[in-house]
Amino acid sequence: MRGMSFVTALVFSRFKHIFRMKQLTAFITCSDIYMGPALVKKFIDLGFHVVRHKSTELSEHDINQLVSSAGDIHLLIANFAELPMPSSVSDINTEDWGHLFNTLVHPLMFFVRAVTPQMLQRKSGKIIAITSAAPLRGIPNNSAYCSARGAQNSFIKAVGSELARENIQVNAIAQNYIKNSIYYPDAFISTEKFRDHVKRNVPTQVVGSAEETAELAAYLANEDCKHIVGQIIPLSGGWVT
Image 1: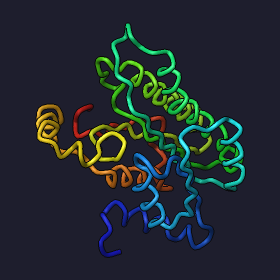
Image 2 (image 1 turned 90 degrees about the vertical axis):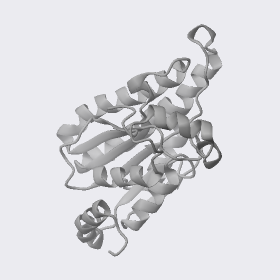
Image 3 (image 1 turned 180 degrees about the horizontal axis):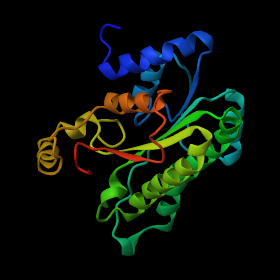
Image 4 (image 1 turned 180 degrees about the vertical axis):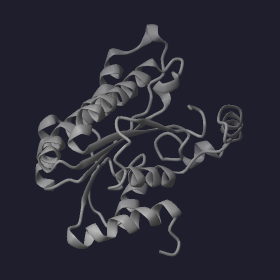
């Protein structure tokens, strides 16, 4: 296990005997964007069979078919991203509002609803949503985006509480200031203006890595992680505590 982080080594050592009996399946949405690439790599490294899907806008019917064709899903990672559409509250565009909910909130509900019956039947499963810390703090002139991300977080809290009795652990990683191609690409985070912004606003004074998100997701997916349910876990360098 040379080169593995301490957390990864612990998770791997716990999972490897399970893999010998039956390989676990992780379904990762939007696998090519946001935290998708890092998550795919992490769970392949851990020995999961990873089912990837790249589309960002899916109908309820499409999602039901995808989940049905994937077979037994032991872990769902709902990874959705959409650019904010900044505006003052008096200028919120109705179409923009609907688009944010159609790409962030509705597919999250459809995927969770689709995988829940099989997890209930097995009385085991893990659901991890990759959301945002933005609604935990509130960003002026971004009320539409914060509302959509806040709806994701509230949904996860409620579902986590609901399914905990059935040995299904549901949580969210609510992040900000994590390097990725959607919100914080290289060209943006390398500017002096942004570096100054980070120093003023982020207690760690750095932008985090997608690999850290994947490490946290691996811990939450660990079979022994059973007492963390319905939590919105900030990963933002102290921007939200």
